[in-house]
Image 1 (cartoon, rainbow, N blue to C red):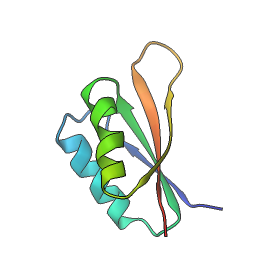
Image 2 (cartoon, rainbow, N blue to C red; image 1 turned 180 degrees about the horizontal axis):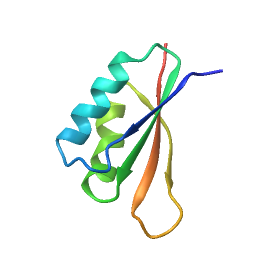
Image 3 (spheres, rainbow, N blue to C red; image 1 turned 90 degrees about the vertical axis):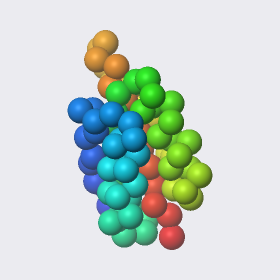
Image 4 (cartoon, rainbow, N blue to C red; image 1 turned 30 degrees about the vertical axis):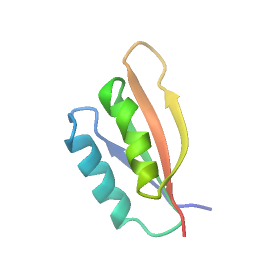
Length: 79
């Protein structure tokens, strides 16, 4: 079973959202999953594409319940 980690960047703005996510992923062991809590808008539009371009696998993007605009981005660090 993959090891799961959580990163909350809902208080951050671009480009810090990307920097924090990238640093967190770099620290993980291969096979790990990082759950990133992020806001709708620019972070949600850019982060999945940017992380995919770096070779990370976007597993899912799910909106949290309610009208908060917060989403959960699941990213895998493969082999």
